[in-house]
Image (cartoon, rainbow, N blue to C red; front, top):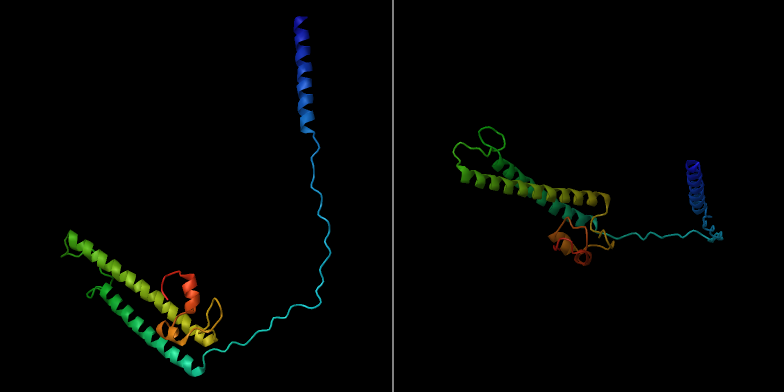
Length: 181
C-alpha cells in the first residue's frame, strides 16, 4: 500500500504544479486602446506651385559651349586611340602579352605596371568622355548650365573651364566631394 500512497502524492503534486503553471499562463493581457479618431483637415484649395521659367544661356552661348565640348571630345577620342594602339601588339593585333620572349622577370613586372597604368588612363578618359556626352545631351534638352543642387545658372567662366560641370561653384564647395572645383 505504500506504493499506492506515493503515487497518489505524486499525482496530486503534479496536479498542483500544473495548476500553478496554468494560473501563471492565464493572466489577462493588457491591450492597447485604439487612438481617437482625428477630424479630417479640409483645405479650401490645392496649393498651386507656379513654375518660374528659367532664363538660361542663349543659342549663341550654347553653340559656343557645344563647340568646346565637341573639341574636347575629339581630343579624348584621339587619346583613347593612341592608348589603345600602345596596348596592342603591332604584329598580331591583339593586346600585348606579358610573357614576351625577350623580357626577363624584372622587365615583365615593369611591363605589367606600365600596362596597368595605360588601362587606368584609358578608363579615366572613357569616364570623362561619358561626362562630355551627358553635357551634350543636357544642351539638347535645355537643362545645360543650371546647377543640379540649387537650380541657379552656372557662371560662364566655370563652364568654359569645366564644360561638363553640373554644379555651381558654391554648391560644389559645399559638397566638397572630390576637392575639385
